[in-house]
Length: 476
Image (tube, rainbow, N blue to C red; front, side):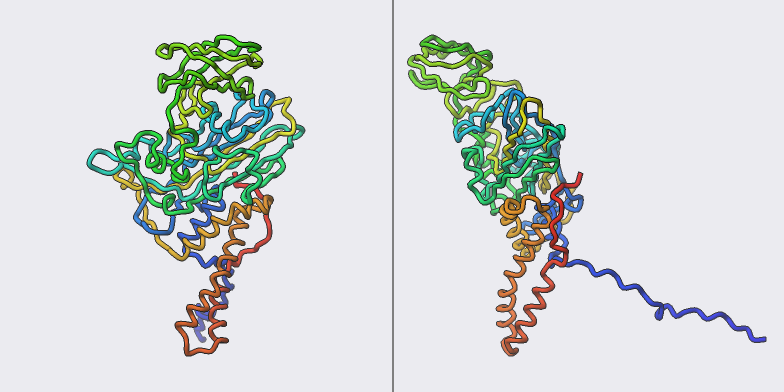
């Protein structure tokens, strides 16, 4: 009897199912994560993102965030959000209007900055306070940082029956301070868009656009709060600008304002003792949400806590008021917990909100997230490797610079989809340069061969993902 063992199939001959083809973006892992961070910052894949360029030293990579509710109506008819990306945990990343301001219309150029102290300041849960970024005597700062990307979203959370109105979303292409521009001018820019208020969020996205915003900075020990280097170290996307005036000037609070119908003497409580008022001039009052100019012809003793003004004939209704001199206040004290504009960088992003119905409260959820790299002695135990990819960085940076205008042109498309489309365009634009470089290196080949090689390179670089539009919603 033969002892025949059952034959075993040869492992090498076993049929294997083909692996699904992986979509290629033509980017390194680090550059791909950078692209995700600037186009879809709420995506978990963006965590741990870095800027893939020199200096590529190890860094601590984290993603601080903030989440807050904002109410518009019934006292206020409009509201807005100013986004001020910050590296510090105790300086605002957003400024929001509130019901106490009772805004009836969007402010003009000067009034935007004058309103900053009244706005609600929102900080995020980063690990380091502003003091960590100041250099010590004879040494560097304990912490320096750079923002990889920043994003904010505004979502209507009120009742469906009251839902309606418009968002005006604007991201400055040069990261100018939007608080210094008239809000009615935002819509004139290619990067602005006007969309309907519904249940979908409005996104505002930003990434570094020049060397100043992409290097690690710290503030010299002797810097005063509000200096250009101080602002740069904390607010890399500010263009070295304060959100409001940089000149310390007196500010006054009055509380309940009386109706003014004729010339009178008005006594105001001084909230700071900085500066000296001119003998004649104008005060500026925010009374129940409307700005007024109050001309005075004489001013009394300025050494005490109160100052008396001789007011020319004017007509102003009674109401809750905040009075200041001059139009651009830069010191705090009007409201409890008010924001000092000297410590806040310029706002490169803004979202104006005009609800259709303001007879009741409209609730909005405002979220903020940023991806940050920190270096320095305090952070060294938490460092992870950072990689440099100059070609990938240039391509993704180009996508980031073009993304705001693309979002404005296609407000219903998801920004990550637009980013992939832009990446394909950037890669295609690079193809002729690839062909020229290949042609110079392979001069012995014919033009058809050079073109074939360049086309093969372009095909590899082009993203393989579907370019179909997808719903414009961030992950929750």
